Length: 148
Image (cartoon, rainbow, N blue to C red; front, top):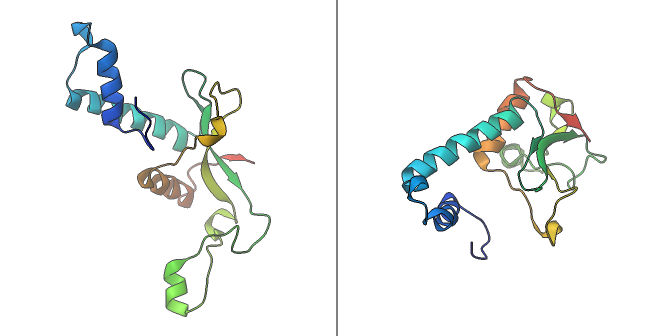
């Protein structure tokens, strides 16, 4: 794989194809590969969000899970702006997370015991769809997560 800002399913497929092009038994087309990868990523998402497990990444790349914490200070540095209410009332209004008793939730990638050089340079950014799915689970009080 080349040095890039983010990796896509196409770049995964290119690396897969380069690795198996000598063995025709494992060659599949891109659309089939994409379906397999998409289903697997959805499986991982459901395990992390809906079941609340810690998903251990292969090749000693760490663990991904969801954590919750209460902000130490209730100011602009620790709270997110509610842009709709701010526009409506003409002054800055923050989300107080009253539906979760003030807790904030986020995806967390534990890099403890990771075998990467410059591991602090890597980050996990969840997609908007996954963040919205997590918000839906939290608002309906279907699951509780690890407190940090």
